[in-house]
Image (cartoon, rainbow, N blue to C red; front, side, top):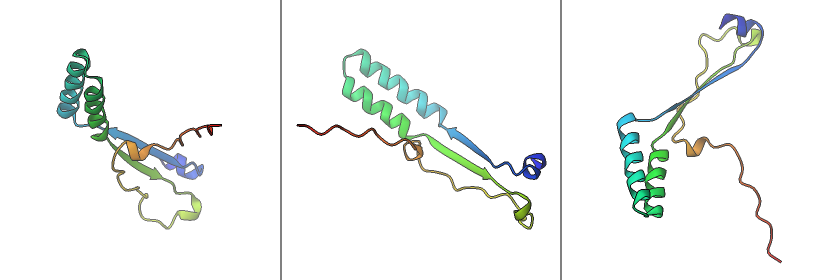
Length: 96
């Protein structure tokens, strides 16, 4: 880490965390629903699994100008994977 600081390289660590038992249960439920032809309900079960994901982000950025800092900066935990989505949706063409 010291080598990165001396080279003024900023590093961001991102970890996606999912509760194992709840995730497995949700996927099993979704699979059963999809197998029985209940596609909407299966999709909702998968969305529930996705909403249970959490992103932990740690941004380590300290160069020589920030040497007086006593610790690395850590970003707060982001709520869900959905809020971590950084891609913008494509624009829909106007109907003519």
